[in-house]
Amino acid sequence: MKIEALHVGMKVRHPQYGVGTVRTISEHTAEVRFDDGQRTVEPNVAGLEPAEPQVVVSGLSQPLALFVQETAEAAVRALGLEKPESVTDQMLVRWHSGRMVLHPADPTLQTKEVPLEVFFHKIVMVRNNLRVLEQKINAHEKLTDAEKVEMQQYITRSYGSMTTFNVLFRAKEDQFNT
Image (tube, rainbow, N blue to C red; front, side, top):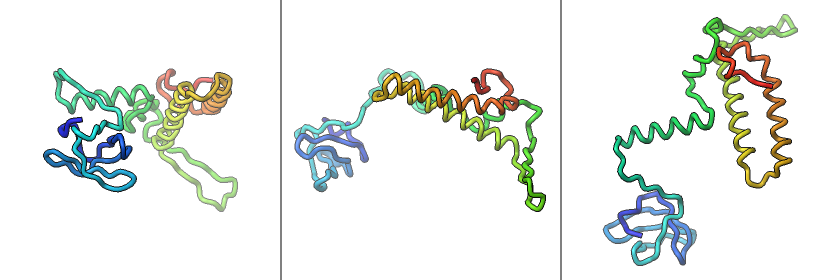
């Protein structure tokens, strides 16, 4: 591995010392902290290799910041996550700036008011977390198909319990389905 390929904080693998973290880099050597202590190694000679996945992007014809932004946005979309400000866009207009008021059975206790945007945001986060959980279950390598189906049934029942809140959603496709 060439010294130019290293960066401080990078995880590397040494054939004798195992996995370590690059602490400093000089012209020809690097200080690497391994489990048994810090060592100075020459990456070209020592057989040092990256210990974490690497990526090479060549021929990039757009600014790096734009590339990173587009990649992050694609990941957010793929996970079904949303920006906090986009959450209220999904809410029916009639509920904007509304308040949910909870009255306790005991009249001596104080009522609780919650802005509907806050409540709606929490409902949407539950929905998003259920979606992510569903994806993780489906992609899990060690669960059997029967176990995946059983877990999916719990998620489906959770969605069913959440249908009460569908009245808050603007678009039908954003609602909870049974």
